[in-house]
Length: 261
Length: 268
Image 1 (cartoon, each protein chain N blue to C red):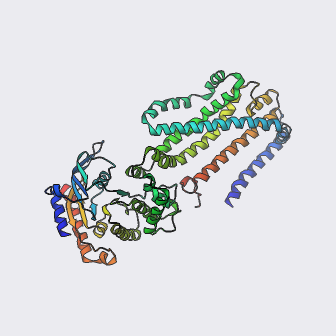
Image 2: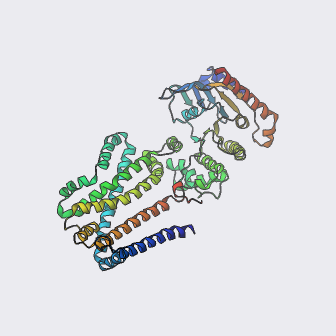
Image 3: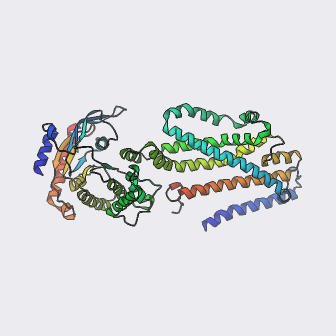
């Protein structure tokens, strides 16, 4: 019942907004070059579906590769931090610098280094830099958030470093890591799109490039169609990661328990 | 029993330190933390094999620190700590059940064996037996959040038993439980410790709990903690409702209570 409402209410609102939008563009005679009606966007989506879907595939590939690299890198570095205070002291400030420096500012540099004929590599690196930090900081926090009594118990029973990491720190960190993964999932897509905008050359074929291209040709409905696909991809990513989080945590962690439980 | 107690008293006074048969001896142990807080000052304590010794004292008197010292989880600032004949297998039960929330009761009880790299099959069997002994047969797969406070504490005790300890350290293990669960666990604990010939060093701030469980009670001074008084009790082998109602039990509780009051006043 509650689940059905959770879907029905936002869906009804969405339909109402689309209907209002459709009505308004006709009634106020808004130019389709400014705001095309939803029906025109639908048509544009249907007409350009194969090329747009192909571009979506390119953008998603960049997003996911960057995401997996950020995940692996962030986790690895967090584990290094948890094992060595010295490494943490030495490296953490640089991780922060990487995070606080606006990625748009370093994107042209990365593009120069990878070369304009390998825009996709630059896109992967940029998206990775954007997605990296939440995983690093959450995993670092999580690996430290160990029940002190359990920690004592591991010491009492002579646990090795590896046993402590594998049996205590990583499971304790799971809720934190998954939260970081959820944030990073969204950021990776943003990073991929930003990278394409910055690259902005003919060799880019992702959705962001389609948006730029359609904008230059004043195909506003197609811009919206590409935008809609990007949103859908983002939503799908978000819910897939939410599902993963639920799958891993629902038996034991408070965050995944249902409100009426 | 009586003789043993007198001998222990002599050990405590430092007369018999060369021929003690105590499982555990703390001699003039002090502990000062890095922040300057002195938790324990010149604590003397000896526990013989098979005893059930309680440390009773006000909050913050260093009872928990004493247990952590014995377990080797923290090092003394001064004094010596010795085991005879060698360091026994030690298990620790905390005030919180301290279970791993991400796994079931059986895997929790198996933890000490897993950490010691006991073969999987044997570890499984021992943990299963330990769970059955604390009355949790059928709950092997239950996650901690699916268990009541008392049941969680039982898993914690099963985990300690699975390690087959000779010395069991307990830090106010039942303080957070309701009276009914606490009494049931008290009775079971006594039976389990007796069956396995486990020596227990038990920290509590409950006069009645210590009087019910212990063969000997050490009353501690407020911080920095030291032993203010020692009270030997003669409880029956099997504690039950009759013991809880008996004159001997109440007399013991009165003595502990009086000693505790004296310890508090003498330093106030």
